[in-house]
Amino acid sequence: MSDQPVRRYSMSRCHTEEAQPTPKENQMNLWDSTRQTESLGLQERPPKHSNRPENWKKGGRLISIIVASNIILLGCTLISGASLKSLAIHDIEVLIFLCVLMLLSVLWMFFQLCFTSIYPNAVLYKDPKAGPIWMKGGLILFGLFTLALDTLKVGYYVGFSNCLSPVKLIYPLMEAVFVIVQSFFLWISCKHCVQIYHDITRTGLMLVLTTNLALWMTAVTDESSHQTLELEKSLDENNTIGTAEMLRGESSLADGCKCNVICQVFQTGYYYLYPLNIEYNLFAAPMVYIMWKNVGRIMNNGTFHHYHLRISCCKHCSFVGLALGLIMVVAGLVLFTMYEFKKDQAEMKIQALVRFYIFHIVCLSLMSLGAFAGSIIYRFDERVMDNHKNPSRTMDMALLLTATLGQYCISYYSITAMVVIRSKALLNVLTLTYSLLLILQHSVQNIFIIEGLHRRPPEDSHHGQKSSAITSLNNPVELICVRDNFSSHAFTSNPSSSTAVTDEILEAVQDELKGTTNNLKRRKILKEIYLFLLLGNILFWMMPAFGARIRFDNGLEVKFYGFSLWVIITNICLPFGIFYRMHAAASLLELYITA
Image 1 (tube, rainbow, N blue to C red):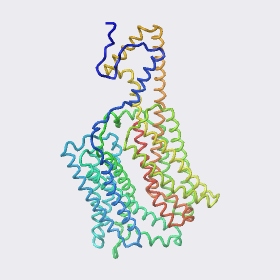
Image 2 (cartoon, rainbow, N blue to C red):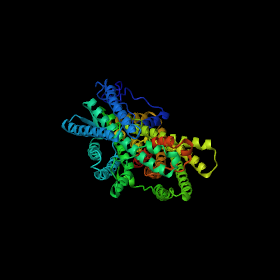
Image 3 (cartoon, rainbow, N blue to C red):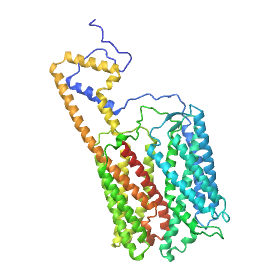
Image 4 (cartoon, rainbow, N blue to C red):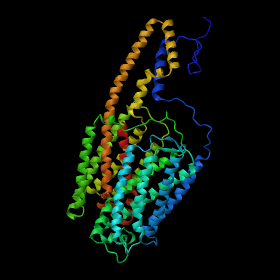
């Protein structure tokens, strides 16, 4: 029997021919390598459905992209042309185009809902990272504001039903139907990975996506025209006499139509709701895009981690971050209100601008320091990096970096103007400092957010480390292999080596416990930073979204570039800046929840 080899345990990864004694210095390596492998969770698995044909996957996406690009370019042409009086394109044509898009999108969403409910094999997988609860909640919230806006529009246009085209009345009704159907559709289907009829599904999703983008462009154009008409009233008429004739605002009515007091109230109300309507389309479009990316996708349940909002995430209250954030928000809203009242008064305008600039500079400095401190804490963070394929995270990164370009662009235009002017006046210095800090804050915050999105939540990283000592219990073969190896070591090696190994293991456990305590402290600090930056980004979204045009009101860039050119620059760049703040706040909320 002594000549027979040691028994083999099935066809598993443990395939021992003979029990060979392991050197003492390699005894801990076996333990460490096992812990690292288990904690990283990097186990190669053969891809499922490897024989499934995917040759036309990119081609199917290409068809839907071509359809979407043609629709969106036609929409850009109509919307931009209708915003100028010099062109023979009227807003009626734009509204008809949008109504047709919304009608087709509604019909397709009804078809898709029925299709996925009838065929059981239509949706075999769901993406757990797509459509988190906070994004669904934001979609419903902004959808309700959009419905309120459509109600005010209906009330506004009812008074002109005798002298205006019925399309103006049909459009808000059609938009309300589209918002209701789309919100229900995304709430039900945002996680679906559709597995059949890929080309039809991708094309339909691109139709819905382009409809949201067209509605977003329309709302941005209307709000920009309204803001420009309001701003030119407070500037010198000699500099803006040609612009009033070029821009076509929402207030342009047919001959013989007069707006009474009631319709003016409706008009003012829905102009204040435009920013919330814009955010609804920007919430819906990324969710539709993720659905488009997930068409035909085969999920591996072991690859992704399910992150849910739990009561446990609220055990550690972020008091410091919450207090500083609320102080900043309250102070900002008070200064914003005072600024809006005083900017139209010549003797108080400069004082209001100086206060507003100083507040922005202080807040941007604090937010930059917070993001920089968080990036330093990441250097000591032991959480495992999540490098798996994740369309939601890829889209978040792309949106953050793309939206940042708007603020970079307008900031560099402002910096160029201030440097060329070479004035040492207080307002010029504050404008230059504000632009530089804006670039710095966006850059540091993007690094902080993107790096945080690539880290697994602490419970997943700690779970892999803490359970490494007992993972072998789930696999009897590994347990037998380890037991036999260590048994042979105990009988063939020096008995004192067993004591040395035990001491080293105890020291490793103590070091791990100390590291866990330090990780909890770092986690708490990160949650404070997340919450502070979250409230700060919400504040910097609210102020420009509801009318703060500080780069217009100071008059410096307007005098340098001219009103017409500066209108084009700000109307293109500011919507991206507003979108960046909301998307950054959403990403920070996700990081806070999973911290």
